[in-house]
Length: 448
Image (tube, rainbow, N blue to C red; front, side, top):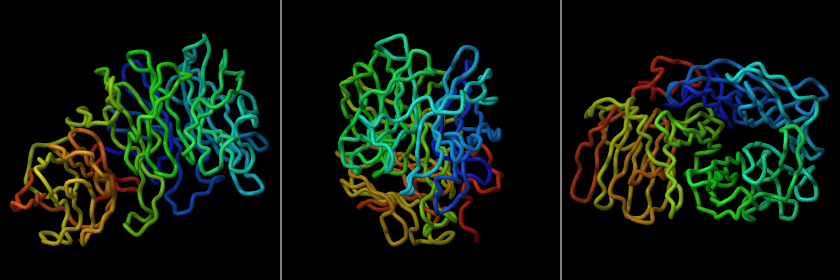
């Protein structure tokens, strides 16, 4: 249900969809660590494959730093591969070093492959193909020019690139924007003023552009301060862009969109872990989470919903304790759903989902709030998923809350309301690799 290569974490990623609807993922990778080092942590792209977007097979490292003296000599960051002739072209972020103030310098490079499986890359020269233009974007200290995403331009026969950038006309803390460049041949680029500059975002990372069925466009961007992602829509690529609000709750990041075999659009994203796999550990880069269905109503804001492709990984309803499980809970008023207890067969709640008529919360021991969101109306149903330490909550089908907890033991789920308490039947989650035992394995629960 989640993926990271053995012994490593996953950060930003890109998807390659193959004609048979299987997928390859390229992803930033690095060791589990409390302190992130810009120049040593993410120096290669990992690669994995899947036929169903759930069961991933590690395929090793596919790309790494450039030679000394080149623009990508110290780190390679977020990438975007796309079909080019019989192979692929890949745009990626290169880091040559740090500014005097210790900020990573960033630009966008290009590589080609004659293959479509995400391997056998050859760089296009030794310098970047596009850099931040100081007329519109901050360069030097606190600059940004990373996370390229390239699509066909809807106003020409060429290409349009969106990048995470910093608006030179705004204060640093609110300068996060989507930079814009265009090209006729993928190799020569012209930089333009920002495609989108909200004016209240610190960083707008991993921009993703998706053309919808009616010809309009959806833009997804990760917000540094909130550690979630938001959406915008526009009739044309150049805008005007309408802000549609959060699409992923805190803890979801770096979204990418793809199409499944039945034509459904789904979003995959990353989710964090904690150093040492304990509740006292700092949050760190983590794993690739399971897909969510992308719902784009014509007259409303996009949202993420439960994807039916996960149903084949669920077992029959059971009343037995389960560390990995899904259940639907009816909502008639305030409630508490106990997911884990302090000890096997214990009565003290160690992990729960609570709703008080407005706030929806994931709580730990003694009711301590781990994550919270406010719902605009009382839902009819909550769907709750747990996979190891990872918890997700859907309200009337919409993905609204996620959290982490390494405390407690599996218990029979129970629902508490003012009318009393009763058992909640769950559907156990079948894991693709239940016997894996490495640093990326699903947390197996506390030891006895």
